[in-house]
Length: 191
Image (cartoon, rainbow, N blue to C red; front, side):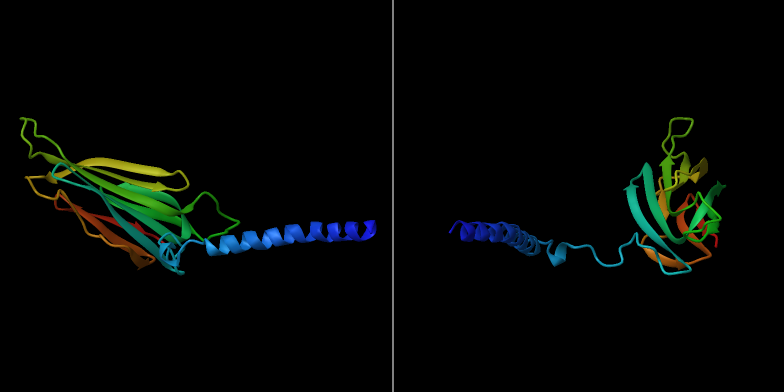
């Protein structure tokens, strides 16, 4: 009789973990994230189709004294250089993903443009517009430029975004981003 009891215990020792695993898996499958709460397929930060870049637009602040917009560029390739010259923003030095010959670039860049209404020397409120522009890569590269343009003249908004929605653009591209004090600021994306 002892033998039969030991054999049954051994079988029970084997079945107990299997039954526990089945119950855990059943619990997990019954408590998944509901379908309506899941992120949509092909998220905004996913890699775009070959020959394209995604532009994701976001208003940060909009008011009479300060306006700020931010655009995220997600490419189908890496870029190694960023530049800003007199309000012209540019990405360059492109190379394909998984290149063994080139390093140091990234396919995700953030462009930020902020316009401030600065006081006049006499203490008035309708002075020049100060514009802060920056391009920041997820590889740590950051390029900035600060300058003044036009006059605010009480205009609202002081920065008018031209690219206000998310978009898919073909590379090469020149994307008009914003208008500040009559000056157009664009991003050039080189192949």
